Length: 369
Picture (tube, rainbow, N blue to C red):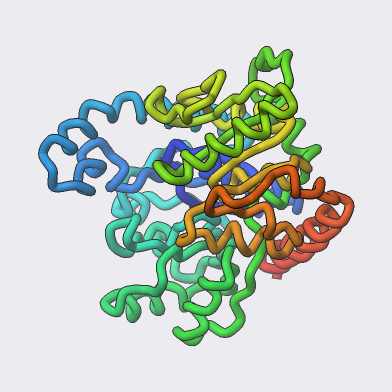
C-alpha cells in the first residue's frame, strides 16, 4: 500500500524537515511505501510572505530577503530527498492539489502546526486532506492546532473536514481538549515524530547526510528560536557552563549572522538539518530555547537547559514533565547550574521507549485497520 503524507514543508527550521523525515521512516518500517506531498503554502511564496506586514519597508525587506530563504529551503529539500520520496509535482496552492492529487491508498496529515489557521492565514484544506477522493482513508499523526481554540467562524467547516477522518491523533493534550469540545471523543495524544526514531537512527542519518564537520574540540551547543530575553539568558548560562569546563560555545542557526548570540565562539549560520544533527550528536552540553532542541537533547542523552518564554512553552513543559526533567526548564537567571544533578538517562530512556512503542502501535493500527 502507498501512503501520501502531507505536512508543513516550506519553512527553513530544522524541526520541520526532521519530523517529516522521522514520520516517513517510521511508516516505511511498518511496511508501507510513503511519499511526502511537496506543498508550499501560498503565504510562503515571495508575494505571500509580504502579506504578514503592512509596513512598506518590511514588505520590501521580505522581498529582497526571499531569494536567500528560497535557497536554504531548496537545500533543506535536498537533504530530505536523500532519505524519503517527495511527490514529483510541487504544489503551490490547494487548487493545484485538488485538480491533480497524488494517488495513494491512505492519506496522512502529519505533525507540526498544520491546523493553525493563524499561521496558514485561514483554513488550508490541503492539511485536512480535502484533495483526496471522497472514499479515501484519512488519518492524522501528531497534528497540532497551535491556537487556544479554533475561531468561531471556522468551527463548522473544520468539523466538516475532520469528520472525514477515520482516526485523529494529535501532538498535545491541548489539541485533544479542543477537539473534544467539537465532539471528537476518540482523539489520542502521541509522540512528536522526531522521538519515534532513537539516537542510533539519528546517528545513522547524520553519518549518511553529508560531509562530516571538522569538530575537533569539546563544545557547548546553543540553539535558539527566540529573541531578546531568552537569548540573553542562553548567553548567560552558556558562558557560565562553558567557562567552568573550558568548552567552546558553538551556535547552530538557520538564520544569518544577525542571529548570533553573545559569547558564541563559532556560528553555523544558514545551517541545514544535517549540520544540526552533527552538532547535536557531538556536543558536550546543550542550551536551547525550542521544543525540537529539547527533544533532540533528550533523545541524544545530552545534559541540557531549555530556556523558554513563560508563555507558549506547553510542548516543552509537557515533554520534560513526562521525563521528570522539569528542573531543566528555566525562564530567568535565578538557577545555579552547579546545583543541577546529572540526568539519569536510564530512567528517561525507559519512559521515552514506552511512549515510542505506544505511539508506533497507534500509528500501525491507524494504517492497517
